[in-house]
Image (cartoon, rainbow, N blue to C red; front, top):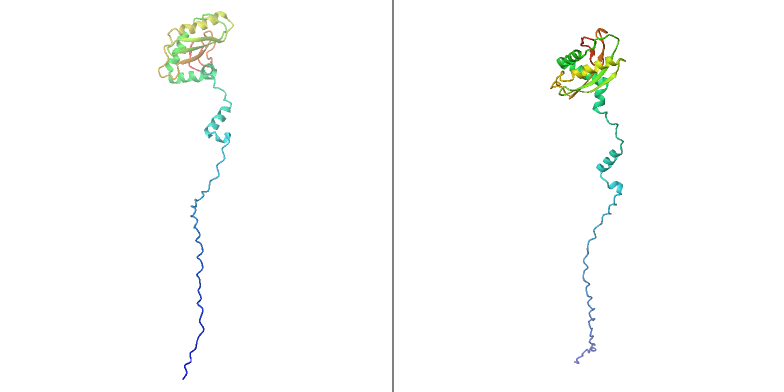
Amino acid sequence: PAVQAEIQPATEELVVEPPEPAPLLEEEPEQEVVPIEELDDPEPEPSPEEDRPTEELTEVEEEETPPSAPDPPPEEIEDSGEGINVRLEGVRRDYPAYYNNIIRQIFNCFRWRGGGNWEATVFFTIEREGTVTDMRFTSRSGSTAFDFEAIGAVECAGQGRFGQLPDELPYDRLPVQFDFRPPGEAEELISPVISHSGRLVDRL
């Protein structure tokens, strides 16, 4: 028998060339990310008026306040009739012996022997050691002789007869206003401070 051979056509060998590899891309270096801090809005600069401390403003306001009227000097208060009344009333109440001695010593030094309806008032100050200063008339009688005897009685009594003021007395000067009349002219004579009508009168 005949051998049949099947002849297959020769197969062309296909050569597949692999594709050229794509060029490698150089990796870019990673950039460091720096976080951005949120900046606070700057505070506005205070105005010169707001920049001053509160205490300074207070001091300025106090300086602008007009000062109140000053208190009257102590001498003016002491010489006023009301101040004398209050002061002598305290002496009569708290130091009756010293109060009565003022009247007694002036009475002993008053040498008027005439008559008349004369009346004079003498103001004076007894200092701490018992001396007398600031002698003056607050009213005159109209008789030079009578006025002379009245002021002479105060000057006489002020030469150590009163004695020094009591140690417990809260002030160093004692203002006194003394009324003079001839003896026997008035049984009751009321003075702002001490009365004298020819005898001791313990009444204001």
